[in-house]
Length: 356
Image (cartoon, rainbow, N blue to C red; front, side, top):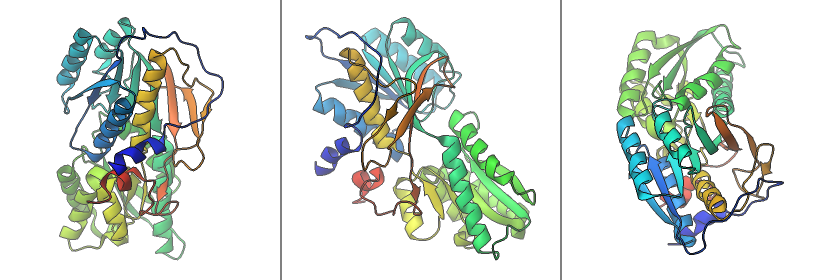
């Protein structure tokens, strides 16, 4: 119970400047929020769910959570269910295909239901707030740390060689954004060749793609970039070890940590990971739906949200470049272990899963 109470410390208290107006809902009606997730077994999704549920419990809000898996039709069916049930707000927490989900988003828009998006933003319709961290910049930061590791092992130079990038599902906006950040870094070194394998957000696929590429390129490989070590890091590391090689020699880096990533960092098998502020983003999502429901303003484009000591702070609010309309809130993500220790008590992985 102590852990659950600590969740609210991560994102509820904040400061923002001038915000838009709204009108309050009837005082006698209990607010109902629908939340649709991609994979309830993934820790970062569990962090979304726990953060949202905790806020709802504290504020007498009903939340209905559906796991749509990786099936777009299940996502669209779930949205239809929510529309029939008469929800007051909607959260979409990760989606495999951001284009295929657009009809569901537009149906919610037609009913005037406000929408918050986490992790991945639909590519159309109005999304009131996409709460994320900078995927391109975070990927760039992690890739730069990988390069620094390569330099340290080669007398300050970047040798000619191959970088393996294990991507998520290529149809996913998240994977495409990650690829942009990595490419920004690798393009600075013409002596490096970037090769990619689609890990599809699963350790088994990450294992197979890493093993295939490491076997193919052998001693030419000087670094490995794993887009999301929280759900593909174990597979990537296991593939390296299965070939009798040492993961430390490849400076494996990426974004999104999870308890698997923390363990691998402590073992020295990962080099650098930018943590995704999953728990805080979910708390913000429900709070902003609550604010809209009760006629309170939420941050608008141009605002900056801040909280002293919070790992996500400061967070800029900018125009949403993915949906047709709406804002994007960019939370900070710390680089672990370079900026924050894997033992830092503010990491949601340690708050929720520290006793594992």
